[in-house]
Length: 252
Length: 71
Length: 231
Image (tube, rainbow over all chains, first blue to last red; front, side):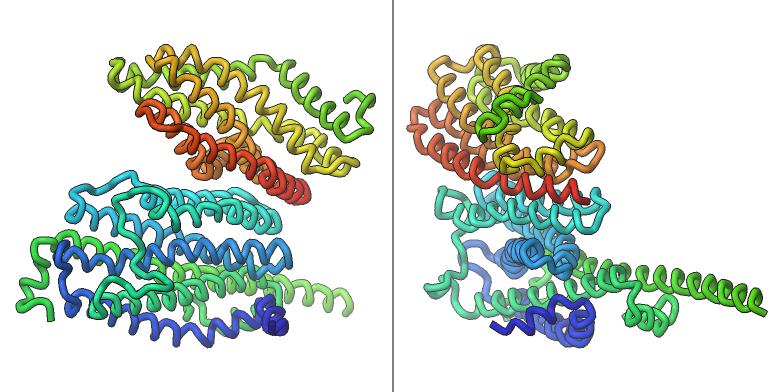
């Protein structure tokens, strides 16, 4: 385990510089991947035998659903790291990830509901997976509400970490709910040990979208974390120099 | 190519409303996140710059008064 | 608080339970409020939806469970607020007994004061909702298992917001999503009973969640309380 890297990660300045350097490349990569995935999925992928063209919504629904869950897991890990090692970067990550995670969860629910109408004949059904995803959205919103209600930064960090860890019990319930109950929702498209049931022309753009959305997530997180770092470290020399160097009203 | 004409592409075999609604909202939400993050950064930079300028002015006032009282 | 018997661990916990109950009985009105709310919420449904037995009987379990959930949310900010504000909580956190157990004792007192009355009132309300006596037993058992879980998870929410003046609504926002599995299995057990299906699975799940909550929730609660007090 490279502990030097871990300790450097705890330094806001080191992270700021790293994020600033990587951001443009990640943005380019994510736009390329997302663009390719969407174009391929909409134009080139064959229509589904049973669902027709509404199947193409999968290229938005599955990546956002995957990201919604893994974002929460990342926050849980960050919460644990923040509680145990008291890294303030962990809380900065949670601050950045919460709103992004919430909007992606909303998108997963929305695309799922709209996809459900032509496929199952209904906008909404109260099965385990959809309900658990809705609960995930509530968990995100609760976390955001808690963070905005508390004043003291240390308390916010600890309280957020505790809340996220307690809520992370929900994630396994979502993941295995399809196996536990008979539901309307399809089983997972990607299984770690089996080949997917779809032909390659269908699942390759899906994979591209998943990777693309993770890259885009990284871009958003880096942007928000960098802003948060500037705010928290505003009394340090390097931030003051940076602020001076920026022209008023400009920002990259 | 799964569609022969652009019209077919837009219609999506009758499911056009659903597909384009999803992709439209999806684009809006994802792009909106980027815009919001950028806006937050600009706002923070502006506020920090204002505070620093005010602090600098205050500091130069203090220095001026100190040098006057010494003189 | 009486000094006598506070030297042993169980003596101290018993002291805390007695202390909380005595304090609560001094403000008897605040004990009745959640009860009244419970009854009112249940009454709203026949009035707002339909008084027919065909609607009420199958819905009764869920209605009772939702009303219990909401009533418990109301009484949650009383759990730590009073002790936080007058400094008792800080004293408790530094005394010789483990804070974890003190939290557990307070949770027990709170359950006795806010959940047990609701459970005792349930048979009356279930009859008003035309729930058969045969299924009432299942409802009672599910409530007996489920309400402590709600209280324990609610305690985490109350602890996270203890430093806020009016954290009541925020507590509900934080806690309700986490109690949804309890609601699903609690009401689900009665629904299974109505369908003639076995209920042991649902009740076993509730039991497992209860065991998990008793062991883990006070850890989170104690940590959140310490964070709130040092802030």
